Amino acid sequence: MRASNAVLDVDRVARLFRVVCASAIAAGIFFRVHDIDRKVYGVDETVTSLRVAGATLPDLRRDLLARRIPSLAAVRVRYQLVQPGSSYATTLESLERDD
Image (cartoon, rainbow, N blue to C red; front, top):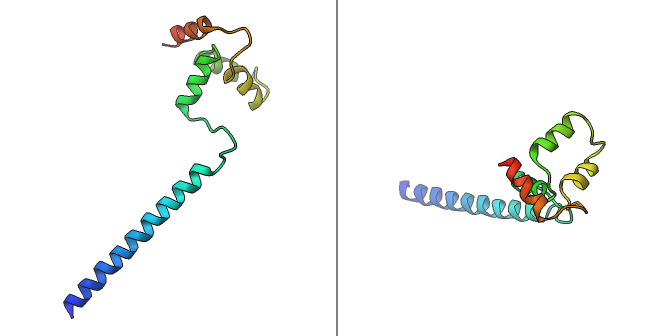
């Protein structure tokens, strides 16, 4: 009887392992394609966009704390898109000021 119980336990553990793995894969696929039509920023991407736009973190903090930015769309336009008058020099200056 003990050997058959051990086999059942191994089968049960193996089945549970497969279910957990399949669930993890399904969740990974879901989160990968969820909101795929929108740009989702992480911290490092946000800072990179900020620097490419020619701004610095202190600039962003100052404007947010002073409530100079009316909406989230305004943050995107000012701090995540390349500004019309900016150049490589502007980006390099923001890197110098920030680092």
